[in-house]
Image (tube, rainbow, N blue to C red):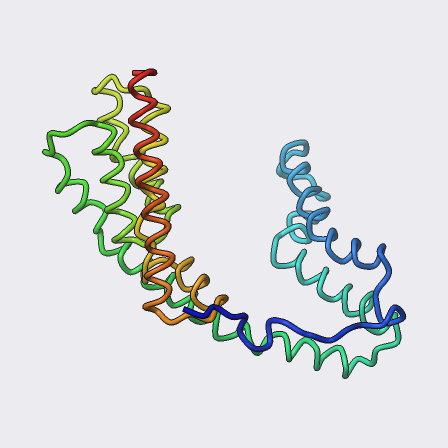
Length: 240
């Protein structure tokens, strides 16, 4: 296996001091979306729904608009302000998009495949399948989360779905809710493979083949999940 950075995502160019942006310009362009979204969050908590300033900030503080404002500002602060022509700035943007376009498409396709599985109702099937298993509640919680992870791909969807399935089991078993939460969380990171958008991100950014990505990512996520389960079972010996 020989991981490498995909062509276009890295550059070996050495910039001169006069080509470098100032510290304030760099910080400003990076922090603008954070500031806008932070103000929006404060407004949603502190101001009533009918407040006009809140409505304005809900628009400018939305992720899409805040990032677009930051991008446009960076065109000036990191481009035309330091002497670069607008054509040069646009060419730089085009060169940056090229290597990312295929990665974004592949990740999006993986996410779409995951959503097809979610909408097909496979979570309900797994719930019915595991309903009569007579094993340790901790191991059962881990297995349910792991099965959902394999089927759905997304760890977030797996852990949220498994939490709803496992809750009645946790309440009736008497096992610590904290330990059951840890078991579900550990199970949800196992077996990352082709239905996981993160799997494709890992593959594309390291420029690996599908086989190489399965050998590494699927292996290490499964190892993490099993080690986590072992840790939960050990904790159960003392907490339980």
